[in-house]
Image 1 (cartoon, rainbow, N blue to C red):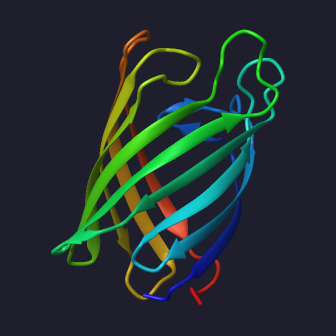
Image 2 (cartoon, rainbow, N blue to C red):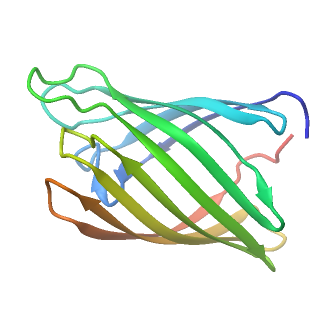
Amino acid sequence: DRPLDLAFSLGAATDYVFRGVSQTGGRPEAFASADVALGRLGYAGVWVSNVRLTGDTGLEYDLYAGARPNLGPVALDLGLVRYGYTRQPAVGNLDFVEAKALASLPLGPATFGAGVYHAAHYFGRMGAATYYEINAASQIPRTRFSVSGAAGRQRISRAADYSTWNLGVGYAATERV
């Protein structure tokens, strides 16, 4: 409920997987983000990661903004994400904009969610695309660990549709301040 809230993150992973597809060719990823929340009005941010897609593509930078209203116990996240890429190949434009509508509901120690993402002109000019996902996450009591999982379906007008899933364990290196 603060009028202005800033958050920064740095991280690394053994692979950057976006909706079931490696964005780093199975190689390690380093990423960073900066976010600002404007009280109850909304949020905006930037996220950057190395990628290895086609040719010399070097970085992905995501710009995003949205609002997070509540409908009773259901938290919504309504927004836009612009995915951009440096050093793109001469043929094809990898950049795209995606609208998102997400909902989550805490039940006991867990949070359950569902979401839909839609891009009119998806990655690499593959036409319109819509991604549907259900997910759940929970803190492990009296620890800094959490567990999560998701299942999704990617539909793309000029490419093969596919399903994806993930399971994860997280660890909070520091306490939130």
